[in-house]
Image 1 (tube, one colour):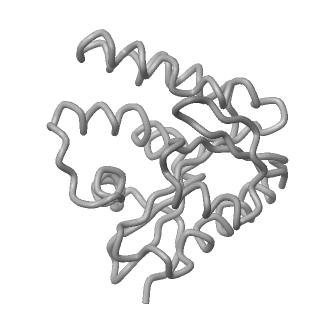
Image 2 (image 1 turned 60 degrees about the vertical axis):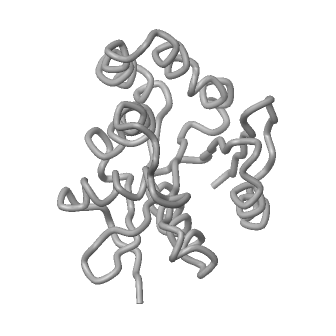
Length: 184
């Protein structure tokens, strides 16, 4: 049976694997996979590992929730160290990555933290997403953080349903993204 625990450095590669395979086997070109990891994963593991939790099955991370607790701190480091890494890709990728966190910026005063959560498909619909969120929220509350948000693709009906069921408040819907927030 899988359990939730704090992220450890030994989980780094497995968490990246989950990031790329949470909707099924990764089929994107390696360049796209590297871009996704730079834009949505590496900052959290490298700069805020204390705010990351994994779903562990027999010593292997098969899901995660990763979090930046303060948007302004995140943005400063992300732009300097991670966004600049996307310059090696075609220009449209840099432009996309530079706007990927606009909704988080818009709501940072009410929801200073933001998260990403992914679980491998064979662990879906077993309550593990809620357990990961619960662990993160308990941790954030203990640090005095009063709100957390996330964005999800507008076409991800399963994710949207999960966030609504869990009690996240719909903040805004763009053409491609939906923003949810929760007060802690």
